[in-house]
Amino acid sequence: MSFKQKRDAYAYPMVGLCGTLALHREVAFNTSSKLEAHHAGLMCSTVDDEVLLGYLSTLYWGHYAGAAGRTTANRALSRVQLALVGSSFVRNEKVCQRPGINHFGRGKAVALIRDAKRLLDDHQYGEAVKLLCALPQLGFAFASKVAAFLAPDTCGVIDSVIAEKHPNFGFKLRGGYVSDVKENVARYQAYCQALCIEAEKQNQLGESAYWKERNGELRAWRAVDIERALYSL
Image (cartoon, rainbow, N blue to C red):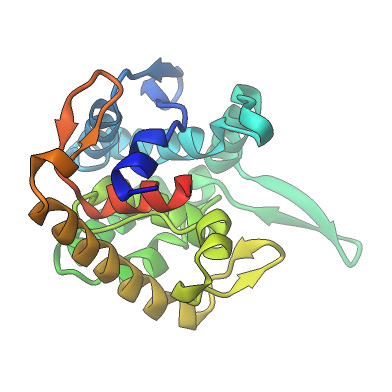
């Protein structure tokens, strides 16, 4: 299959959250461009609560699809709730807390996302993902989802599906997930650079090689589109 065929076959649900932090609801999109504009618009907003809603919407989107094409809206909403209020667990007979942003600090979370955007704009992709991993409910893979919505031209998602299908990128896995080890920070930097190079190669082939949106519109290639083609392989 060509990159175009792979990208055209990408069919992850295009959903997110709209509304407010306290009263959010699902919103669906008919093109990936509208989905991306929604998330980028929120996370790049000057309004703090909109930035946080964009981060929660990314969590919702990323947890929405389950195995065998099933949708898991309730699971996605539970992850959003955990990101907001946190959770408790018992370790060595002691009750411990996983903080949500209400405890982590809303201002701190917003500042972190804005700092990550500045790093992405400076082409420091690995450092941006490393920074985003500090947010509640964000492991390395989900941090890369936030990065990909903040900078789709130059960044892509790296999750266990791509890491296992494409071991040449060298990502370390732990417990079936992409680990947040130091080596993966450098590997994500190289991964995004490789995605950008391949996107440029595809664009040099001309409009006939452009990928097709679900509404039939042709689009030029970006790093995130190469990642989605790799995901569909």
